[in-house]
Length: 310
Ligand code: ATP
Image (tube, rainbow, N blue to C red):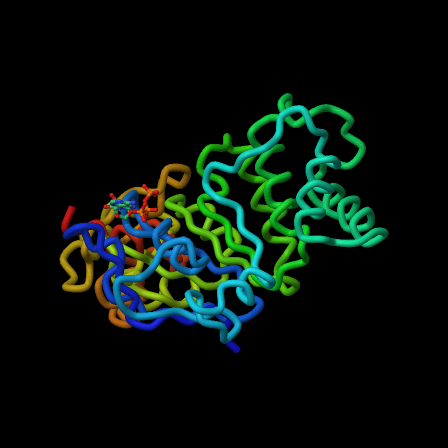
């Protein structure tokens, strides 16, 4: 089942296409990364999905409810953390969660139980300090806990890791990853490494248009374009490189930093490289130690998809 479905979603600001005919689906139970460079339309998409901005044309449903005409039904099942969340700095984490829960009318003892469980999950249990003294990472984890206070079936996070240092990001990503299988998570980011670490589904947006949607593995396979292989031999790597260089499938090559008898080769035709390399190495009378196919990183895929026209 799909939790989110958009159909030809378009949002114009003047003559700027913030969204341009976006049709995508977010499957239930997925950690879904909504990826794109600055100005791609990510925030606009989340605002439209939450009923905070009206699409110019097209539409969207969440759990089968129209995001415009059935906003209350949508909000009852969705938790949201904006890109710049607001807190009351004088409250403790627990007081803040209780406050957020009371706005939803969550009764006792459910509210106490839920607040404690969420503080535990956020690594903030037992912290007596006011939120004003929290680090950015702690605030962001509290923000996610607050977005979960209503036990939503879909959690929407706008750039949850952008303002954090590497340690803060790792903690927030761990927290988001721990929701896998319990709550569908949709989060926007321009940080490829973060998306690659925890998402199972990704959509890439560029200048308002959906460039591609799929699993991280599918994207790597389908849009990685060229593949990199690592060739390591017992001796004579220069002769192997010279022979590989003359092959039609060799795009470029680079030495491997920590292995003097190895080279990474970007190949345009993996099958041809697989067939040819053992023969080349054997013909030179040297031993083949390794022939590894290296996975393209999401970064390479992303640059291939949206980087070309910049
Ligand atoms: P960022 O990562 O920088 O937040 P984004 O991918 O979230 O970028 P959006 O904020 O959705 O992108 O913006 C998409 C485009 O729409 C941009 O060109 C932006 O300038 C424009 N835009 C967004 N909101 C408005 C608005 N309220 N009025 C006018 N233009 C807007």
